Length: 275
Image (tube, rainbow, N blue to C red):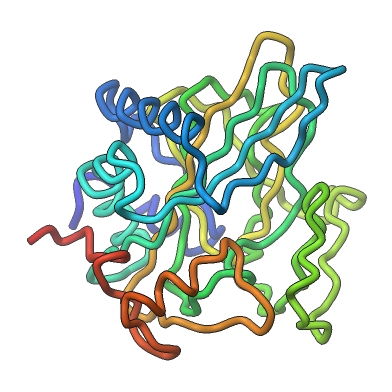
């Protein structure tokens, strides 16, 4: 049993599809994460997207997705911090396999919220043992927090990827998928979870948990956050017709991973247990 998570937290994750972990990261890990974000902003990858750029309102929303070996500070955070052990126990997996890291930087006062969506529906990975660990380097209030629909990881329905700002995902031709429910217009129909968070806290959520938000920032408050994606024992590689998001299937193929294979390679190593 891990000393990082309790039985109650494991039960909450399995039941709700999301759990809050307090004080998992100390100041040294937060400093390393900040160094990674600074380097990332200076040298974005081919996967970067500017979701919002409105000079008149002084709003900017930067996104990037990075894999192991691209940013040293991210590698140190993902492979050296307590996160891998914590997510393995929450997933009920004997190991934690690193997938990739998502990076979100909102300028102070940015109001644009992330639409409600499921992450794993567009991943090049299938399996129940798949999750994200999201942490902010800046204070999070409940009113500006990332929100989650409790139990939505057990809906059992594959939904189309909603439109993300100017990104329409025309490459994904899975037109047979259901339209994503309008959660925002019917909030009272769902149990929506979110928390006040301090730097060092994090939330871990299942890859199929419906989530959105993290916007409506007040003047003077920006948000630097990272979300590290993790896989467990039952995860397997898949090729999505048209595209995957983020687009890393080609990287996996170059590392010798074939559809149906466990996703373990130099790019996606077993981070826990550590050798």
